[in-house]
Image 1 (cartoon, one colour):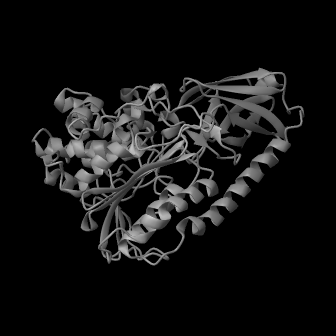
Image 2 (tube, rainbow, N blue to C red):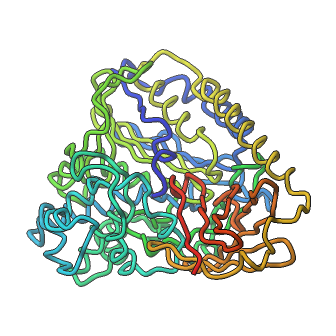
Length: 506
């Protein structure tokens, strides 16, 4: 799932005409050292990788550690939250149900949920399953996710709240990556099968493929044997352990937990027209349906890359590169970023799973492997990207430290008690602010364990530090009318949602 511009860190992918008849020397001679250097450069605890070529596993192994304290090594069975790489499982399931005559992807959502509403009534009357699987709703990328991600809300409550998402773009004319849309589409599965999404996906895909170490729900990931520990370095530059995400309420958009050994089976099936080990798991027309281009993301040549289009099918991205069609998706959850990629014309697939969400190496490595197999001139992609990334990180860390240095115990302009109370946002719901001397604390009622410490800096500005480091550290400013506090704008990490929320004091 999460997330997509971390998910599609940069909207580029690699492929070119294959001039090799055997495994490239980069894979045999340099891959290990390249990855080991990448772990150091990008402050990355662990990584698991699988490469499939011509129906055979060329590479399947782990690097680094699951947990920086226990030092237990990553291997091919180490579990990672694959997040939005779950989306193709959802889209494939719905395409299968269409193939079976149980539904049509162009069915209206209101056929299955008569009371379903989105912000615009005209869109409500028109929006289809395929629109949901193609990110066509017109909302902005990640819009609503601060309300939905790791939230206490049920799936039904999230779907109901979508009517409050005011579109930023035009319906069916714009691309806006939407997790709640995939949830809505996935929740049609129980309507036509009688099985919850997680059961149907397991029964129809996971089990037939023999993915014995894959879970369609991740709420208890911390208790799963072999699970990697999630980390981030955002805002501080230091590895910080994070709590495991609880996103089963968004499961069709990104709840699957898996390992590269299992995902290699899924990718091998993608390369063999739906077959695995001689058994037809999904019919070829089902796979083809997911790969048909539904959404244009870009139709302009990408600077520095021979790419002329980037688009989205159903649960999978695609692009051209030197005449080859490449399909991929990335996934971002707190502490985990992953990618999967397959190039049918070259019979090549790649999976890379990592447990630090604040790095681009998981994508740089994918491009490097594609370049090696597809005859693209060698450029060390990790080194090429690292400089700009580190420069951006230095600025972020310096800005955070500057904000923290402004906390000197100064007295706020109004008594702390004036800021205390219940605040509400129409979409999110209530938060509670309490005072302790000159400091404040925020309890986010929509999240089970999310709080924030709020300390006064100066010039009417406060510093808000979330209890979950992945949400971030931000300045905030209360709006006042004389001695009365009226509202406050609250921001979360862009990894969650780009825009701030206005909470009005009750």
